[in-house]
Structure formats: structure tokens, C-alpha cells
View 1: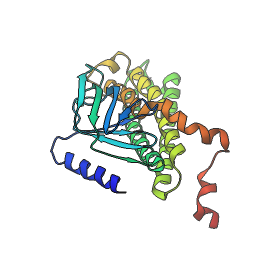
View 2: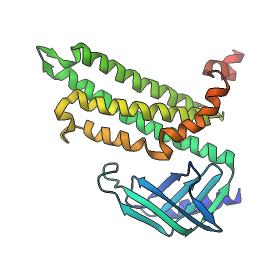
View 3: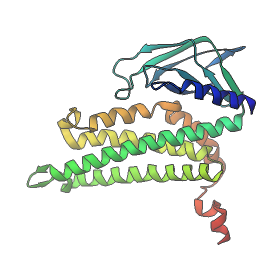
View 4: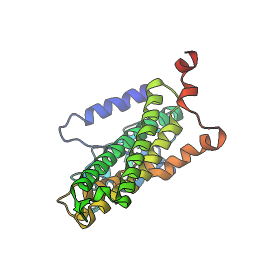
Length: 264
């Protein structure tokens, strides 16, 4: 508990500046190494050009670093206005750390739910913009949204957004209710990441050649959906955490797990 209070104090100190930036890296494969109070590791890509506080989350705990952070610019590979960098840390002093696998799993679940929410928001924006464009763009005497091929695609995109949103809502509900949420958060991120690829590409496709122009927002949404899906280990790391529940037990519906529903 004292270690977590120290981590909180360091976070508060680093965030006093008006333009301070923090970055969270999930060490999914245990590739970051510690030598006493020194930390070493690297990340090929992070969507930022500045880090004042680096938080390295592993499956066992958390370590905070504020010194010895080396960033190398990665041109054209970041979220708009955030920049992009390759991160390298070589024997950087660890400011604070705590070890607690259960708390680490909970922190990761919260991070995945927040990331899935960002993806769902961008998916909704891309799907809605392309839908409205298809209703306004006329070809062969009627809006292109009324041609069967595009009409079916719009329906599929709408369904993909709803599917990702429902899994996100369940994971968020579990976190708020204090229930086990590791697998639910992982599943929500997998669905959001996979559907983001589908929706981003097809939103651009609906606009045709215009979709690649910066006059329209879908080209930005496509790039950001791809970029967001790489964070926190992406879908593959989430699959590692969703696997045990997927093979060990039948599907756990809310209606059968909510105690208030059972008692009604």
C-alpha cells in the first residue's frame, strides 16, 4: 500500500506542469528487465513525441520512470498532433514500484476498457460519416446508400459498432460492480480492434477516391483506428488473457451472473 501511495505522489508531481505527458507501456511478454532499482527496455512505437512520466505495467506490478527516457522520432506513424516515437530506456532509475498481480490485472482491465472506448468512439464517427455521405452522394439516379452492395456494407458496419459497444459496456459494468473483468476487458478490446480495421477501411471505401483526401475525416479516422489498435499489446496480448475463460467455461451472460437479477 505504501508503494502505491508513493506511485500516486510521483504521478501527481509530474502532472503539475500544464503540458506534462505520461505514457503507459504494457510489458506483455516480460521483455523489460530490472537490475536492482534500474529498468531497461524498449517499445518500437508510442503515439507521443514527449514523455515526462513512463509507467511500465507488467503482469506482476508497476514501475515508474521519469529519467533516462530516450525517444527517437518515427515520422508519419502517430495519432494526429500527438507525434510518434520509438522508446528506449537503458538502466533508468525506478522512481517507485509496486508488486501485486491482482492489482496489475485490474489496472490492465481498466486500461483496455478505456482503449476500447476510444476505438468505439472513432468507429462510430467513421461509420456515421460514411453513412451520411452515402445518403447524399447520388449515382445512377439515387443515393449510393440505396444500392444493395453499399446498403449491406452500411448495415454490417452498424452491426460491428454495436457489437463492440455491447462488449465494452459489459466490461465497464463488471469493473464498476467490482466483478472479475480481466477476460471481459480483453474480449472488448479484441472486438473493438478487429472491428476497427473493418470499419476504418470501409468508411474510406464508401467515399471512393475522396476518402483518401484530407478534405474528409475518414482518412484520419482510418489511421487513428489502426494506431489505437496497437496499444497495450494489441489484440494478440488480449487474446492471451481471454483464452483461459474461453476454453474453461461456457459463455457467462449478464442475466445469469447478476445477483440482483437472480433474486428478482
